[in-house]
Image (tube, rainbow, N blue to C red; front, side):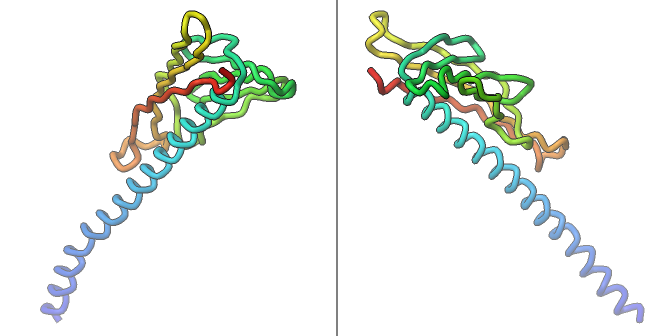
Length: 154
């Protein structure tokens, strides 16, 4: 009986760390998938809105106002509010572009339009952070994103 207990104890003590590692890797993978997919979505959405606008109304450090040809969506305003990147089109309500599992920080818009306004180009950069409410390394991820787009209406 003592031999069986010793064998079971050895097996359990060797399996527990393996199971904990598998669970931790699963959590880390889920965190990475959420942050990377949100970063890709936000980056593509920003490019889409910039490319499909007809003009730039204003560019602030953390906000941009774009003129659109559609009266329903004019103007399109993108800004940062309390860690959420929001888009507001026309008289509609502001909608968060990022999920509740992520936060946005260090948003910067830069207007690189030419002096004669023939080329209208906007660069954006931001940092996307996981927001799982835990300080465990499996749930913490922060990645910087940078991109730019030129208005197609030129």
